[in-house]
Image (tube, rainbow, N blue to C red; front, side, top):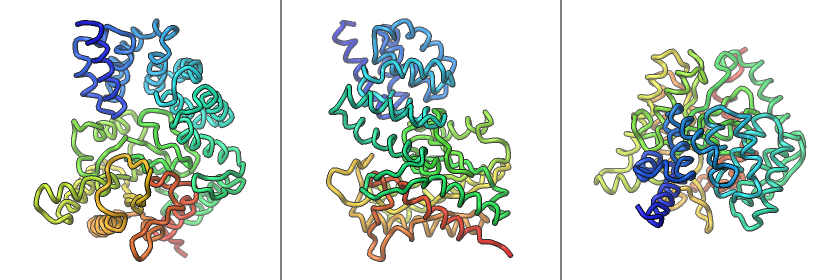
Length: 413
């Protein structure tokens, strides 16, 4: 293999890695993973996402000697070390490349998530400042770096402007935390379920009390909002949540969380899935299969309920978090996947799913929590003030989430 062919192979693997296509990364690296330092690091990173931690660790050890001279390799190695639980070593490597590797490479953001998870908001602020100074034109440094700064300000109790330009007052998070403590004290049924492990796609992030949606199991994730512990499986679909061998590997990660005690035996699990299905897949699948959209929706509901029933049979109390209002039609919005239909059409689709999910869950005694009706108007338009990036719930949604729990778990005299 020529050097040009090798470079093309590594570049192809790197592109697949950014899309979390980790089995394809390893296939693309076949015959070449040990030829370059970056190849070793890419293979280690992908193996860590496939939960092959021993293999990932061995590959990391092979790549480590190259980290001093290859910052891109160092960023991937540091990221992988955090995934392997080697926090001290991973942090040291990532902190050393903050201003030499573009934020687009990902190491900066996972480092900042670690700082916030360890209640070190000032360190996160400093890392973003260093990266922005070194890469002033980085879109990721500007956009996702802004979410780090907002989350850090919330932790510090400082007032700040959210991405919608709305002021979040001082001590906002501590006030939210106090209200959760009050709710748990007044509602024994809810208190008995705590802690609640929120498991699913990136929409689980809001239950961390931050707007960080990129840490993926088992990366460090802040936990500012008792009674919740957040586990982001990646871009999992409700339709195949129960299946093994999918691109994201959501079912394997769910099993791993339980097997390792991250979710303890008998721990409450709240599943948060379905938004991606409804935004991007239901309409195309219905057209492809020649069936009504409700038929595809019923298949997603059946899948989610099936996983919930398995977890209940294994001794876990289960809650379901319903998909939120659809992302608005707005030029320049980062869709994280191509949307199907107009905003009102997507909200009608979400409403249909939520109604069917609630009906199926009610027959099994499963509670469904939802803020959809609180954030979507009668003409099926989403109130964007509750979203920090046009897609995920932001800080101003936290009181709305509390209201959803109040309605589901009322005070019993």
